[in-house]
Length: 228
Image (cartoon, rainbow, N blue to C red; front, side, top):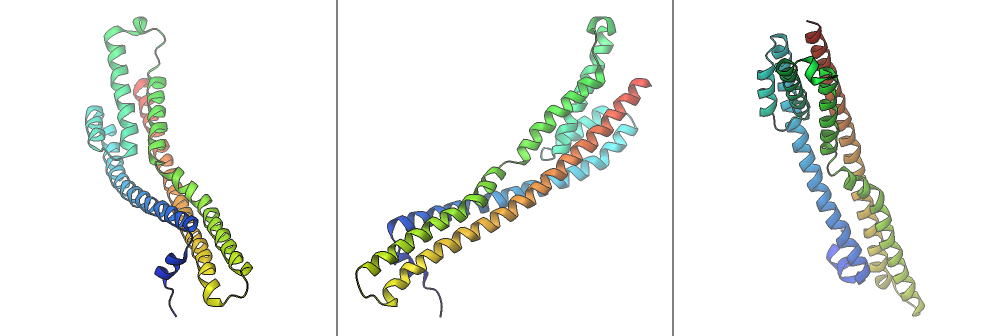
């Protein structure tokens, strides 16, 4: 025996219908965020791998400008964007030291300048990677309670029928069904949102590690260049 969703919808009270529509809208937006993040992370991962593979060779050959141009071409890679900021700071710092001299720039520290540029962009890129995740977290935590609200209202409707006297299962069945549908929908949306939130959180943490690793290696390069 199948579930007649149309019949259940027809017997729903206005409040439960509003709750159900709200849950469905949240689920649509949730799936949009999941799809968008998957595509974004896929592109970011592909470009980051390509950039890191070329970056080591650029730095070994001291081709800073080429490394910068390559970073600028990788628009979707958070690692490339972080390195772009660091390379720009390195080139600008070298130019300042070369043009004005140490006496004119005072206590200018090239390594500190590069490091601060890297840190600023890392924070911004980490925030960009977390786009939409707040909604996923909110959806995961609130939809079970929203579904439970629909359940409570459906049960209240059943009690209202029982107050009227003798009723049959055909009369109270739809009210019980709407209560269960609201609960099931809320739990289903919450489970998917929670799984997606945890998955994307792990991916963001991996990107943060990658950005930190590359930044640390670049700072080592700047220090060695300064000693040279």
